[in-house]
Image (cartoon, rainbow, N blue to C red; front, top):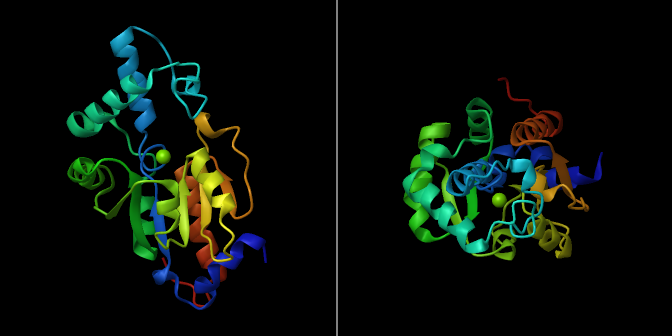
Length: 214
Ligand SMILES: [Mg+2]
């Protein structure tokens, strides 16, 4: 059995429904940066694409967007124009994930984003998950998730420092801002969220003693 499957003792015990999955929002479940780049182009008359956002620090990326402008656009989009933020996964796949596991959206953001975020999930995915608002990567790591879908390089770095054998399995969703991120133990890189969800569902099917008919 591959090393990452150690995380799945719950699968092996036939307890897949008890597996806790944390899905990051920006850059993972939601194509937030695509919307921010688009809004920035409108503001500045530039023609950047999301591929130009090639460093986690947007100021250090090809876009060279000042941080205050980034957060201004971030808040404007989530609070006033959330229709501009596209979902990153196929809603049917997301629904299968919700049906199979205990899923929470896990995100660093101000509390005032909670209601618009709930409405965004309802509109784009057809359900509202539990929403865990955290303040940092380390807090996210302490939430007790078995599996985390994530895009942030600093989260991967924080995860690599955790010594516990029980630390969560992480699916790193490839984006231009994390392409240089190393992939340490118990992290699996996937090209998008659909591929990551499919991979987790496949693990469940392969590992669970009683396969669930779908
Ligand atoms: Mg993110």
